[in-house]
Image (spheres, helix red, strand yellow):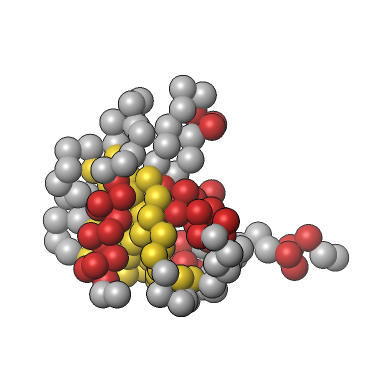
Length: 135
């Protein structure tokens, strides 16, 4: 799957967003190492702490399907359907991804300029991990 196809899948996923409070629709498309694609959207709640981001929705769906290895994630968000500004994963989503992905894991973002590629380690160089609980 090309980067553009993955971005397009994230944009498509954003259409399913349940975002009555922020009015900001976010979609994520997660590619597993075996080529399976998992999409997610943000699901808001009146109790904001119960809200789930698109990235975690995609990740948790993939894990529930038995996947544990991933190669890329695309994220796209917009309040008006233009996807003109970059929508970046939050810290909670980055930490959740770090449970299954190496620092080299690619995060694709989009805006009016085009596609931007980041690595998980660019965002989260020192994730909390199992070794963090030892010693």
